[in-house]
Length: 81
Image 1 (cartoon, helix red, strand yellow):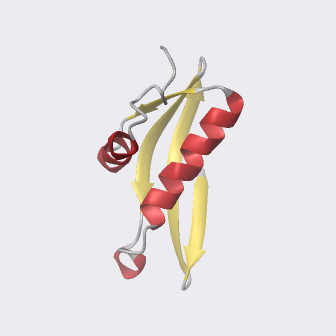
Image 2 (spheres, helix red, strand yellow; image 1 turned 135 degrees about the vertical axis):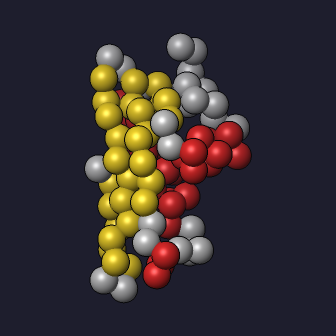
Image 3 (cartoon, one colour; image 1 turned 45 degrees about the vertical axis):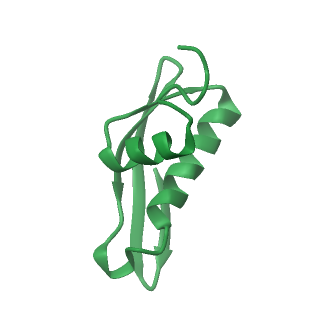
């Protein structure tokens, strides 16, 4: 899990790692701290982590899927499946 705490509220990203694939499951940012780019930062951190280990990326989270597409990474993190 990746997490950050802002103003006493915890934003987090849950993932599963299996068979060379990091699957993002949920990205949760409480409304009290929303709109600050925290979700994007969490997804970016997960992508950097996956890249550092040579893992492919998959997403079951609508927000993360949108962020990955916006970055042009594709769900395989730019790597061949």
